[in-house]
Length: 408
Ligand SMILES: [Zn+2]
Image (cartoon, rainbow, N blue to C red):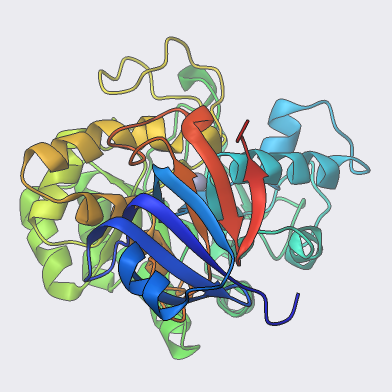
């Protein structure tokens, strides 16, 4: 709709920008973008006649960004008995699930998968008409079976040799195809979604320092940032030394490494639900990262079985969890941050503004500010602080349009 303009009013508007929280706040939305943000009184005086959507009993915040997911390639066959004919359909249903959970932007990994014949371009086509923003990372993956298994987004369903992971052609293609620094390579072999006995070599370090440095330099030469899947002190040290831009998981990071990460501007994508061979990011670990002034995002890595026997997770078994648990897995860390004096804007940034920056979209979405896409949600309270259930997210807006509603 051209020239569509309206105002939106809320009890509390958490902007996640420098303005902070505005009580009895409002925004003017024009053509899918935020035109202005202020108090209701202020904006109503300026615009006395335009249509008003009144949510004055609700909180309004930016919608979520989950910058590390596997919804299109790995999840479909883990969740459904699909074939190649129906894989895209399953993927789309998972995107809808994410959207109804308040997520309007995703960072999707394409790793190569033995049962999927889809290329990264095929995945791009799947998301084309979906009212969400999806950024893709082209990656390789190493799975910690007795005999290690390696795949890449470029070679797709065909397994590759370990030496192929550092092949110049493959590395170049991965950097060219990547839209953002996802887990472009697995420094440690992953347990993926397998039980411990099936993946005895998970955690094993796959690259030498020189190999890693070579790959990092190739990405940087293409003008691309690089992210990696990494856990454990030794592997993390190697990534810091090699100049990796984004560490996904970073489970087991030491305090002195956090100081080094801060000094280098390295960003961290924490996955409190699991994803590596060692215990995932605890609320205390995330607090420590934030205290070290590192830009931290929280992501689901969905679909994923929750790491067993972890006190901060609300799950009673290891069944696969999806993007709908983002608030639930972020909540313990978010509440601990509030307890330690961080305000709701700083805390909400971990699932909005910071992951938007990982996707390179900090000027497009992730906060409520003039000129940004009108991607936001209406909820019964502040997500991750007052609420953790997707049913409490009442309306989701994407580029100014209502795309999810649980009103009446
Ligand atoms: Zn992952």
